[in-house]
Image 1 (spheres, rainbow, N blue to C red):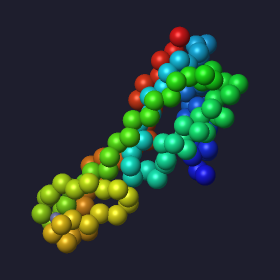
Image 2: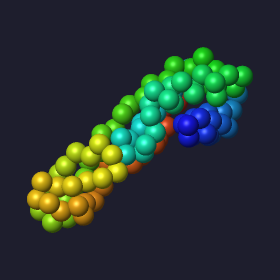
Image 3: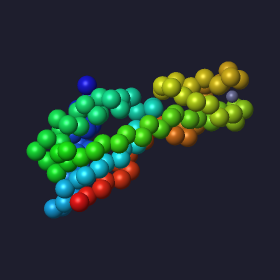
Image 4: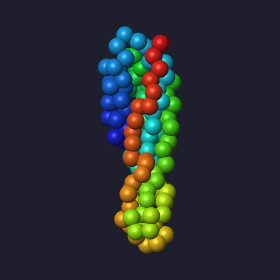
Length: 109
Ligand SMILES: [Zn+2]
């Protein structure tokens, strides 16, 4: 479960930056192509946040769908995983979104 290490890194990174404050709310953007499961991150968050400035913080996860553009016909397609196959038959695409794992906002009180 690599989400534990990822969540631990996120919590550590936030704690480093907030200084003396206490974290009230965190918004995370998780792309569909990251292979990171939002539910698993939510589960790990409580464990990782315990005893830190993030303890008790509300965690909001914004899923970002995977999108790509075909290099042959320039159609835009949805991606559910790290594979893309355009309706035209081409598998050569440019990824437009869905690969990010971002801390979008942190509210500190
Ligand atoms: Zn195409």
